[in-house]
Picture 1: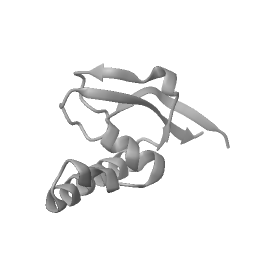
Picture 2: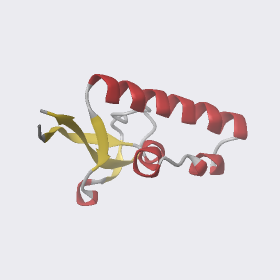
Picture 3: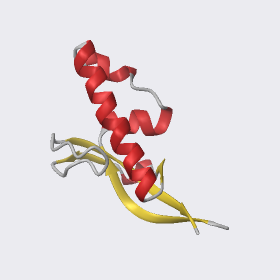
Length: 94
């Protein structure tokens, strides 16, 4: 069994990256209320779980491929807020 990259263009927002990379959502508290941060974390964790259930494991990619500013939606949570997008990959066992 080998691990294969099945999506090499999975660009995520900073909120999703914090959770994907470090399983840490404490940064959400800086810009959101306690309730808002908890709701946003739940949304992100549900999106990650769904992607990992249906597609494969999300992993941090190559920071040289990050986009400093993008109007494209986050591939993970779907937010349409413009901002930085971070390169990630989706891995699957083959």
